[in-house]
Amino acid sequence: MNPAEWLIRTAALSPQAPALMLGTALWADYAAFAARAAAIGGALAAQGIRPGARVALFMSNRPAYLESLYGIWFAGAVAVPVNARLHPAELHWIVQDAGAEALIVSDDVGAAVSPPACTRLVVSADTAAFAAMRRHDPLPAPVPMAAGGLAWLFYTSGTTGRPKGVCITAGNIMAAVLGYFADVDAVHPTDAALYAAPMSHGAGLYNFMHVMRGARHVLPESGGFDAAEILALAPRLGDVHLFAAPTMVRRLVAEAEGQGSRGNGIRTVVYGGGPMYLADITRAVQVMGPRFIQIYGQGESPMTITALSRDLVADRQHPDWQARLASVGRAFAHTSVRIADAEGRSLPAGEIGEILVQGPAVMPGYWQNPQASAAALRDGWLWTGDMGVMDDAGFVTLRDRSKDVIISGGTNIYPREVEEALLTHPDVAEVAVVGRPHAEWGEEVVAFVVAAPGCEAVPARLDAHCLDRIARFKRPKAYVMLPELPKNNYGKVLKTALRAQLAKAG
Image (cartoon, rainbow, N blue to C red; front, side):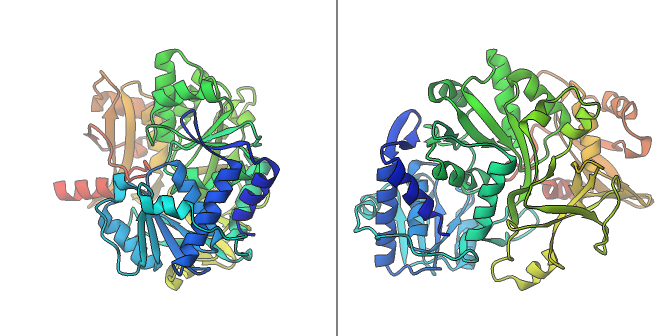
């Protein structure tokens, strides 16, 4: 089903319900939201954008983002959201790879972008030309879209090379929506989805549930993540839901603790997209209460592999609560998850292997990349590249990306275990552990450390701390102090950059 059908249905049922908001100011009710999307769809069709054509979005978070998304789907086209923080050269590469025929930008990020060769239309959401698209003769109805029809072309963050285009179908989106309702959270018309993370990524994928239920879509006036702004805005909105990367959760919790706030007005914070350490989420619940839900997914199975419910995140009574809180939860109801060895054989509970996934939310493949598709999709399973372990109750605990595992003296060392140990030291704010080539042992463990404010992370003290918590052979052989860790535009630590730094240092 075309996602624009959900917008039409909600607008018919609740035309005057608030839909798009900038801060607390109303931007459009559902009737206006649907009318603008239909008009934008009509404008795209008039420019020769046919069903199946790709339309790229290079915009900061704003109400026009959702109007454009649904306008693209009204026309039966494929949305290609591009992170607004990427360099114009990276944007050009993605647009060219996708063969996008149209590009919608915002002036703050796209004013200086020259039109890629494949585009027939480039328009800014801040111009009179886009305002005219909003007033164009509307399409009478969304173009029909089959379950297998491509709807969203998501480009991976490309931390190890050129990003790959993940093909997300209308059926994948439907599975993600139903999985959310079954295993993550309910959505009510009184809720407010707050888009503080890039809408080109996971936060944007959560729009569907809120459109379907007729909830509010709120764009912060800052256009991004500002912890103080969120804590001030949430009580005025009420029933706020937001998606946040772990780094954002840490900043939100620190701000709340500094203000003496419990996060009033925030109903749900769904976190994922990177490692959430046990110490961080334990503190988050202590400071803000039972507002947190964890999801684990990839672009290849968007937000839909495992989930750790609100009750499980907040539970402190079960004898295994710490192990469960350190996990990423259990498989979604519509998803099969298993742990396998290199040959694809399932491993028993407690043994580490690669996480394999199967289900209706898994992508059909990568855009025009059969080699990468064949490597990722084997025998009906998605090979995630993540290493993990599953216990007897089905809780999956991530160890690391397979490429990040350190092999020292023939023994696997999982960086996350070392990072978890170091993060319990009060002098440590952030840490990333990588392997460095070693002539005798193959690799040795190196920890990059960001000290907590006002603290000094002394290697000898950190070493003693590790020896009290993990095996001697796992402790770092060297510590590198940094003012901050290198991260990509989604907040993920760039371990490739850290390895390059080590290689350069010799």
